[in-house]
Length: 270
Image (cartoon, rainbow, N blue to C red; front, top):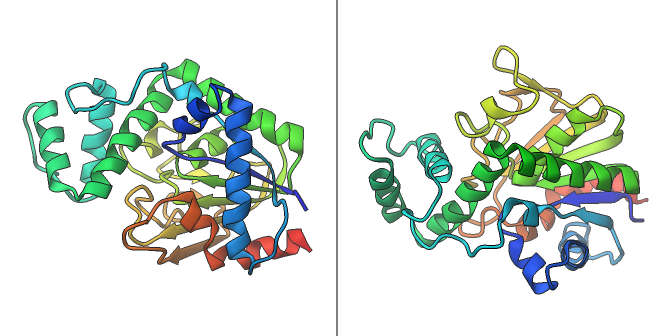
């Protein structure tokens, strides 16, 4: 039954620490959780759905604790926060010092959104601005797909960006179905324009080794901006806008437990 590879999103460094700084241990702990989450979406059927989770979070960190303040964030992370806020419709016309604006921004967000932003900005910035870290993350995903030869890859959050680039970097990687969950792939001035390969005339494309692409996003997910990827990418076969939870809008648990996954996965689990 294990025909699926998973690719995680932001905020998963704690798995690495708790596993004694073992990437394999972190991947295994996450796989067990993702199997339980997907169990819910598939009507309570038990089983090992995921063969492996591609774990890359340790490559985005330098072994330091997460920054406790805006001032402690790298400038690149602060810039991601600014551009992300503009996608939310906040601060389009704000000018002035970067730290001043980002500090103001976090005071305007509710607690959960602010906590999300403080995870999202540094990890996205680390991936997009540090080419060594970027290549290491992509290689983890490519190696995991190559090793497991899955029919399906489910990529959540930042993992959808890493997966998209890894699949383009090696067109020999072939999968029947790519499912992106809560994806920021289309986020302007943060992710979209920085993708490799770069979009042409404002459009990206489905990776050549992917037979079918399904995108699922919560309408309130502040990472999936815009939630509709068809406006930015050719080759998205199915687009589903769901309503997971107005508070818990981005977690893998909510997305993997979403009934919208069922019809797409069922043919591969028969």
